[in-house]
Length: 464
Ligand SMILES: *Cc1c(COP(=O)(O)O)cnc(C)c1O
Image (cartoon, rainbow, N blue to C red):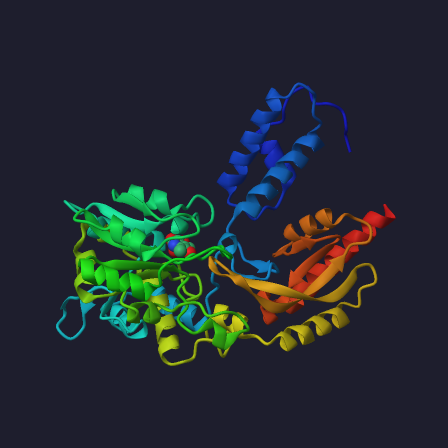
């Protein structure tokens, strides 16, 4: 192979021929070659033809890894925002598939043949599920909050009263105070970070108050010298002052999480509404286990008002989301949420999997692998719900604990992340851990193949 320096940079066509088969669309490959050649023209040191081809291949691989693709989640975090939150079950996807590949009655009333109400049945079913007078759905929970604030904090009542202890940041770049201000509401902070009393609220509520907002403190937990009024106490105050109380539940578990796993109880929308809140909002793709959505439930008067707001039209959901949610809500109403991993709701099924099942899977995995180059053992670990739910609770779990022998754990983890599909674990000391609670049983055979490949790579590293 020629290693002589090139005096001139090769043409796009020449590189295109040299790289051969590639599964990315040709315009993307050509653009990548152009960008790479441009970059090389600026470089001061000379490049061989092989260097050029290798660099293009590397850049193409980088692009390929940017495509949205499925991965194996070995983090043990059930609702992982970076990994797409809740995976959907087969029944839900089948319902979406049917609506996606045909026309549907999205806004068409079949009995009369006239224009119909969008998502009327879903809203009805959601209201029953949340034991609410009415319910509706928007793009996500952040959108639900913006809509509620726009509607309730306007005119001569622009203020939203919220405890300083609830001005939280949820994930990357989502801060409750910024959301409140974006929606034009005037923020009235009460209490301190760790203590807010009912009197603090009482003093802040006045003629300019549009609503009181309670935000479920979902992604962290404060302990010690901490107190704040209960939802019931706040509801009584709101009632006396004749202003609405809204609770942002964040995750919004429909089933009692404590019935499914050894974790604490996450408040459900129905409970919060029973405590006297006028509106509750929560995400569709956290503990509910559905597609991305923001669900709002509560008093009919307020829900109808939200739906008449001009912003509602900009925040409404697509038919695929509505069809998916419809299937999910029916699963909950039939009591079939968690019992079959594939037909039910995977997040709930994962939450409910007994640790002994995970242990047997781990034993079978290690036995099938029969690997001499990797040092694999079974570890008792703690999985988490994630997505801002139950920050205190960890779920007893089982992980494969893998110690690479010839490469660093960092390099080993990187190798698995670059496999197809990617395996994402977490590093603990000198080991990479793959928590089996978030790995689907149907992925076990794939995991074995990928671990075998990485063991082969390990051996090559060692022999080199
Ligand atoms: C996750 C979360 C949100 C944001 O919900 P999205 O559906 O991601 O928009 C808002 N509030 C709380 C308390 C949350 O936990």
